[in-house]
Amino acid sequence: DAKTTQPPSMDCAEGRAANLPCNHSTISGNEYVYWYRQIHSQGPQYIIHGLKNNETNEMASLIITEDRKSSTLILPHATLRDTAVYYCIVRVPGGSDKIIFGKGTRLHILP
Amino acid sequence: KAGVTQTPRYLIKTRGQQVTLSCSPISGHRSVSWYQQTPGQGLQFLFEYFSETQRNKGNFPGRFSGRQFSNSRSEMNVSTLELGDSALYLCASRSGDGSSYNEQFFGPGTRLTVL
Image 1 (tube, rainbow over the protein chains, first blue to last red):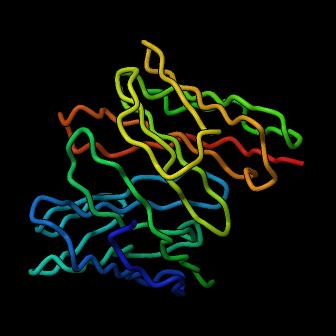
Image 2 (cartoon, each protein chain N blue to C red):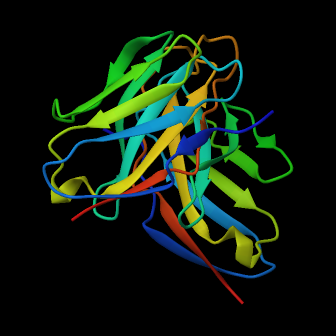
């Protein structure tokens, strides 16, 4: 079973920051938070991951709370091309872990 | 590097038939995982192969099977197809050996329709 909880859908105006929340209250000390997104009819795409510090790359920023029980993915300037389902998962980045996806959040970018 | 490739991209079969799907991982990746995606159930983990051995398995019936070859390419097979097997089948590769953060890279998927 997925260890994360996400809202089923969210709206965001084009050009604004999209903030996607994820709850992972049972996260273990050695588990990382990973984010993927899936644009319609394509395979999921890796976005970012983090352990406890905030992370930023060219696609997004990841903010993890101090207790690590929740996180937020931030798309700083959302465009219509960011319309997708966003998945948050937690896992140990070792070799043999089983990677389980939840239902994700369907993000609608409004023009 | 070339990405994950899957063949065929689209497939139509009838109930009772069997089907084989193919996946070529990113060069150097030894782990290949398979997922089934349907509108109702979302992304469901089928199994993972690493160095030609099944390392993890999801909750699917024995009609779903797979294998991995020495070059890390993988195939999955579904026998005695049912209407409910209609789905997008996704393959994902990663290094799988713990030497990196092991992010998965997905292929475009094979869309299977069972009539």
